[in-house]
Every structure is written in structure tokens, then in C-alpha cells.
Image (cartoon, rainbow, N blue to C red; front, side, top):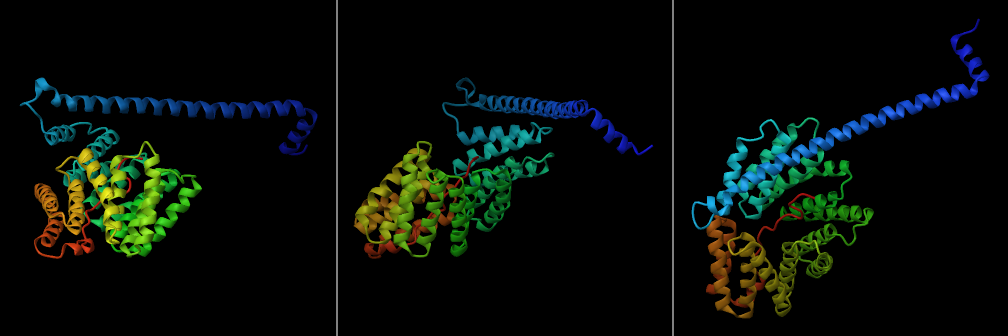
Length: 383
């Protein structure tokens, strides 16, 4: 009588068309089922995203009601007070929505960071990472962003080992996502290695970043300019000033052609390029670079910001070398005042060192002084 399989083969030979139609129907039904399930998942995700956006919008609108003139306690309102108010409100809100809570914590952290309130920024960003790690299912992109920004907070506080650890943790996440921000993540890691005097390792990381950039056809992208800036900083640290200058100019050429580049990024490159020129005794070439960097930072950050103070100190060192002592003294006083307000002892110590030159050392030796402030990492915000 034969087996079931044998009988099936005979039936198939007798009715090939019917079997083909049956198989086609099964395949079609399976495909429709998969597509239907995918559509349902997409709809659920879209509805979830809309709900998430609405909740974030409602929180932010409620948050900024405190800046309405008719609700202000006086003629003006301190921005930090507004942020602190929102921070306290967030502590009591959205406890059953950890993903939205993490988004808002990260956003507030970035605002605090932009105001050079690095302690507050770090606390909020650390909490955002804690919430993000606990999410199920995991939010890989959100975690990668928050790890990067938490590392940046440590970087700004000159806690380079912790920053390196977090930058390294974020790298495989960006790689898994296939996200172009992986290039920035590599550049961030390279920057923190340079500050830890791990320059040879940093150069290897920057080479990897350039390879990745080329593979993604990002040759003229600002992320590639960030790599060239990092290479310039690394070679500057090694005393290879001509090579450093070449990399800084390459970075600048990309930034100035990109309308989306933040002015602060351009100022960062101009400042470093000015330092390299000054270190080579090319004071008249260095001056317009440092002046433009200082002007941008005044405009973007204001007077009471550590980055502006760092530019004032660098400009003062150049003016000492040029013999313009009065203006140099004024800039050092302004920088010292800012560092005092921010309780930045490292920055204050650098100003005192420059002031020592003003007080008695040969101004022509100012170009050899080590005057560096901690710059922001390559990419401090969301990709």
C-alpha cells in the first residue's frame, strides 16, 4: 500500500497544478500574516511614539510656564532657577514611564551642560543612563546617546578615566545600530585618550575613525572634521606642530563649508590653530584666529562661561608675547573672575600662571606657556 509520503508523491505527479496552487496559497497566507503582524507592530510603535511625544510636549509646556511674565516673581528670572524648578517637577513625574523620563532627564542634562553647570548635568545624565539600562525591551539608541553624553559630562569635569570607560561602552552599540554617529563616538574616545597622554593609542583610534568615515562616504561631513581636529590635538601634544596645523586647517575647511556646523565648533578649531601658530612664534598669524574664536565664544556662551574664560586666557598669553600688557591684564582678570564664580580651581590655577608671566617674566616666553582649558568632547549632544 506504500507510505503516506509515497502516496503524496503520486498525487503530486497527477495534479501538479493543484499542488502548486495549494503551495502558493499557503505561501501567500503566511506572507500576509507576517505583513499583517508587522503592520500591527508598526502601528503600535507609532501610537506609542505619538503618546511619548505628547507626554514630553505637555511636560515641557508646563515646565516653561514659570517664565511667563505674569508669573515671574520679579522683573527677571534666573535660567538656573527655571531649570531647577523643572528638575524638581520631573522628580515627581512620569515614574511609570521610564523611557520618557530618561528622555527628559537627558534633555535637562544637556541644557545644564551648555550652561557649564557640569555637576548638575552629570547627576541628571547618570540618572538617565540608569533608567535607560533598566528598559525592557532595551532602547539601544537611547542608551548609546545617554552613555555618550554622560561620558561628555565626566570629560568636562576632567574625569578622563570615567569618560573613557563610558565612551568605550557606547561604541559597540553604535556599531550594532549601523549608525554614522559611530564616527563621532570613535573621535570622542580619541579625544579623551589624548588628554590622558595615551597619544599613540589615540592616533590608532583616529585612523579607525577615518576608515569608517571613508566607508560611509563622509569625507566632507562635520564628523570627519572632528577626526581631523582630534588628530591635530594629538600631534600638537607630540610637539609635531606643522602636522597639527595641517590637520586643524583641514578640519576648519570642512566646518566653514557646512551651514549646520555650530559656531562653537568652529571656534574650537580656530582657538587650537591659533595656539599652534603662536607656539611656532607666528604671532601675527595667530592673532586673528584667537580673536575670532574669542568673539564667537562671547556671542555663543556669554561672559560667565568657562569656555569663554579659556579663550580670554589664550588671547592674554598672545598679547603678553606681543607686549600689549594692559589688554592682557584685563583679559586675565575677566577669566579669573569667571573661574572663581564657577569654582573651577584648575582654570583659576592656569590664570594665575599666566598672571605670573605678566608680573615679572619675559613676555616673549609666554608662547611656551601651557595654557589649555578642557574643551567639550567631539559630539556632546544627540546624533
